[in-house]
Length: 73
Image (cartoon, rainbow, N blue to C red):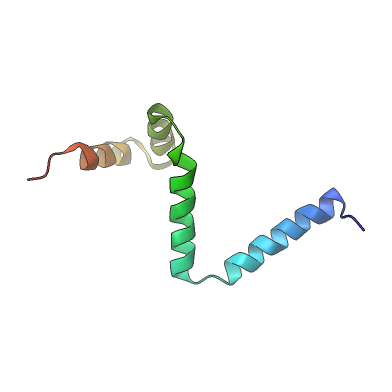
């Protein structure tokens, strides 16, 4: 018997909760890291800069850009 749209939504939510509950902190950290990198890997520079500024603020964006553009001592 096929699931209704509402049942499928609840199944997805239940599975997501199951996955999260079964992960330790290191697994959760790695998952979040991988998700962020994957979501930005095919994104243009301007959108990446906009997203970082929107989520983390201009100061964080400036610090991050400086950290990757400064020449090593």
